[in-house]
Length: 170
Image (cartoon, rainbow, N blue to C red; front, side, top):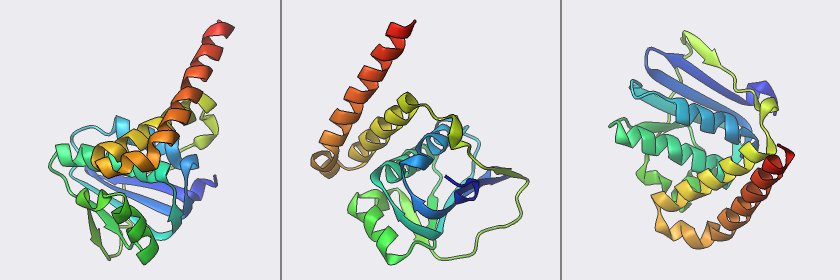
């Protein structure tokens, strides 16, 4: 992943996530870490998909994690500048109930820019991210279970094998 592909900008409780190119599981762990470490003091989250050429289910599941966390905090996540294809993908998984779709420019004035580093992602962490992302998609909309139950099952098997392998090394 090129460092310019995913940019998370922060300004006084407002976050903008900018995605360029194909948003896939390579973004998984860095974006999941952002979602899990997001404290409850945020006031706004916008995900700009203007330059996003497509998304896989892992990426969309992590977007759903962010959406659920925001919903819990009564914050509306805005999906900015999604083209017809990306909007179709998100709506097809029932994620439109978490997001508000808008077309507008993003704020370029940010006091902090975070470029996630995916180079430090372990295979185990990546597998866990795939499991978490797909379980989140099912949690958002039960209709996603038939689509992703095998993905969850196989990824969980990978997690279990990798954990056992790590444990055996110790």
